[in-house]
Image 1: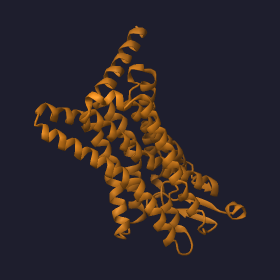
Image 2 (image 1 turned 90 degrees about the vertical axis):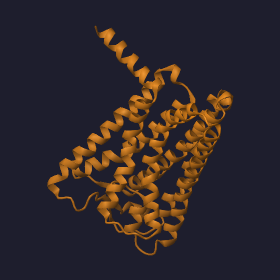
Image 3 (image 1 turned 45 degrees about the horizontal axis):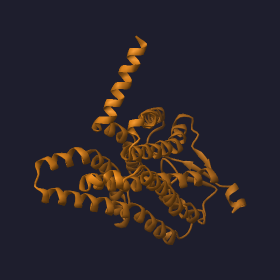
Image 4 (image 1 turned 180 degrees about the vertical axis):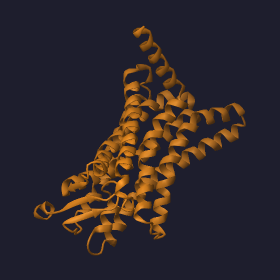
Length: 314
């Protein structure tokens, strides 16, 4: 494997049908996307970190989600930008497979974090009097840490399986980063067993959290419906709208891709890359903005910090 890996390079192709004259436009667009994601996620992490009154379970979940998104973008976008800006899209064997691991780890981690956030909303709405005793700081930290660790262990088999495949010395990756599906398209020989195993792992990492999320919200809606209180419906709307928006951005495109793969629907490489970019990077920009716009405590904290900064400047 050592000798084998030393002679293999992976070349990111990105959008193969886009003329070269648009390379700088693409690079600048992705640079704006990365810069925006970096600023908004970094601002949310910093804001919650320095504001002690935001050291609450829900905001700890938000920090973990923002950190995961920020790391994902930092591991993938600079190389993708360099491919179009400097024509430097080549990755070594180890660089590609390291990126492969982090892509699947951080991409799958979001579904587990959204799952524990749904559990937090369930307790907050269905058991409000016991919320502080159930969702403690320790429980929150342990659940977040366990999500990072469990997903890392489960995802580790993805690069290990893909690394057993045979690749040409100069492998073209028709994607914006090294992913299992993109690499298997360029591998030699029969990849069906590897594809099926990775699909099972991916479905588990996506569908199990999704099922728990849907179950928790079904119980929430049923409980509020049985209560028959319009005030409770308003509480549900204001408490869960933010989370449901984030869930929609994350789960719907991924479910579509898995259904397309299951139905053996072959999408053109550029269309697949575009969909991948949309569901990988759009939520990373939208999530912190949605939380800031819909969460009163974050808005008030941000407003107070701005006023304090203006006052000190004057």
